[in-house]
Image (cartoon, rainbow, N blue to C red; front, side):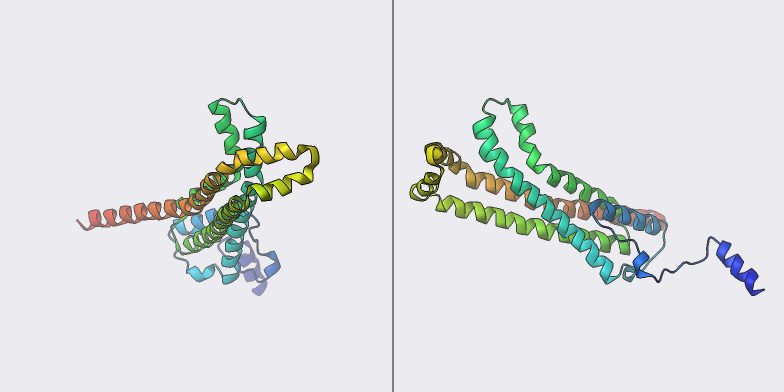
Length: 238
């Protein structure tokens, strides 16, 4: 009889499965896998199952936070590396006769990782419905927002300090290290110096918007969901 019960339990698809081996627990490793896991939580909670928020353990919550932090860091690094190449070298010295569409197209390249990941983070706002999904989404977006805000502050400060240190004497000493190209480097730098702070401000503001926009979309969509639930309850009560 015991064997029959064991066999029945093994074949029963409704039997509860508890995983105790921590090494087998799937952990998201990047932004896309984290969003995919949030989608799985949404499927469970959208069916009406009220799962306590503690189901998402502290370790898993920190995992989502670290993924958001890493995502924001990588986006900021891509922007910091590509930003000066396009705006301080290619546009003023290489792409001299671009039409407005080509200028806009090439100008968006440094911001592509930031834009794409911001849209992905905004997309998960539709899954902000239950205890687990709320906790996971908040952890993910908090890590990303913190990283981007710190990066925006550092970018602005670095370019502001560079602007203030760029005196004719300092640039002259630096340009003299390049021999025959010293004259071109000296005048080339002062051609782009007036654009340092405005472009740094633009870049920093874009990172701030990328950090805040997903939170705004989550908040607005959550308010809409709550309004619909309240309206439906009022209709039923009436």
